[in-house]
Image 1 (cartoon, rainbow, N blue to C red):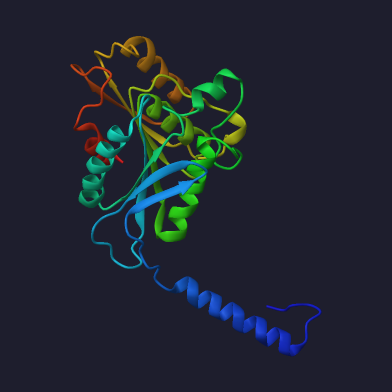
Image 2 (cartoon, rainbow, N blue to C red; image 1 turned 90 degrees about the horizontal axis):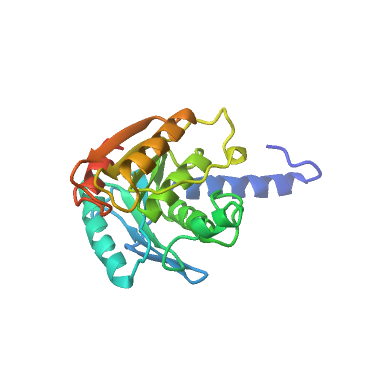
Length: 251
């Protein structure tokens, strides 16, 4: 590497800095203890396997709650997914929306977009982008295996994040999603399309299976996504206990 306008001594010094920087990058990252990421009033809980091999690249799963979240419901999710993190050897992040649900619906109603992890600067998606950056800073992440899972409003958000950020998220596993937002300008036609495991209860009395789930799947397929259906005949709007593990195994 030649630094134009520099003396030989400057070049030698800069070469030494580069050498040390490369050595630091090669060093194993010390693993932080499971905890939380806090930013601008928002919180995300970070879960990891109990035993992690230094330098091991782990898949990353983002899990989004449904509407009406409470501290108790989030703590229940943290307990549930901490077990799944260790069982499946994956990093799991459980973010909390600032309000009772994600701001996606409000920005859709206003005709704005809040679904790009690159361009949203103030809302929930900006926080998700910050969380992803923090995870990359602290852990070795398998960037070929980043997925979003969500339930009800969180399922809508998981699909929306995936279809608009295919360079970041490769799969989405929603349960009982009611809608999603797709901005074609955010994902060029040449981009690979994330795979979708689309879960829905056939007895859902909130988002009707035939009126919501089936048309949504067709819309996703028409947009180039591979969609695998996960139907539970007796299930309603609530998430079956086995769905998270089934979805992780599919992923």
